[in-house]
Length: 263
Image (cartoon, rainbow, N blue to C red; front, side):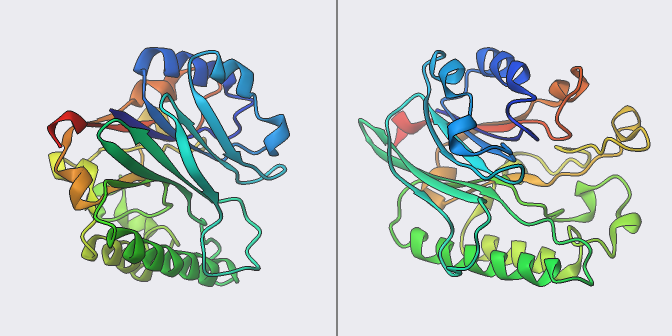
């Protein structure tokens, strides 16, 4: 099973890109972030025509997440528990049913948190705390669990071109990285770092200052795996070439392959 995540930065603007990539990469399950549309406006017909079941949790103009799956999707649950007043569409959990059991996938779009001197940074940290509590509970089920999405977290200096330039940014502040490490401390595994320690494995390049052309990137899109999922991990890939397409998203897809037959 191939499970992918991609911040498409407006699904309607990037629909051609998305359809091309779905055809080429052939993922079984896809987590999309920043779809930037309400559920009714999501272009589901074109995606369903490729054989995907579609569940969305949209929001007008901002945020929005979606799950696409070639397998039946059950128990699709929007919103992250822990704050009834949080109206942002940033979380969508789905259970993928297989003959050998289930795989639980949570599609995440964590808050950016900038500027850090505003209320946006405490909101980011609170969201990460809620995610930690969610993960604690889900890990108790001892089932394959994947947290996939745009975490807006640079985990370490090797995950950004120029660490010094990001010291005071919400994506790289010590509290942010500590919150990410707390997730790993629960027993989750950063899929990419399970297969390589190499620096320069970026998933995002800003539109400004020729970041893509200079390869001044960041790694902020992640797949975190429960022990039952990481035991089945056979590969990880970043589809960097997508960033070179005309009018691209500033993020690129990252995916994992799981050998669920080995369970």
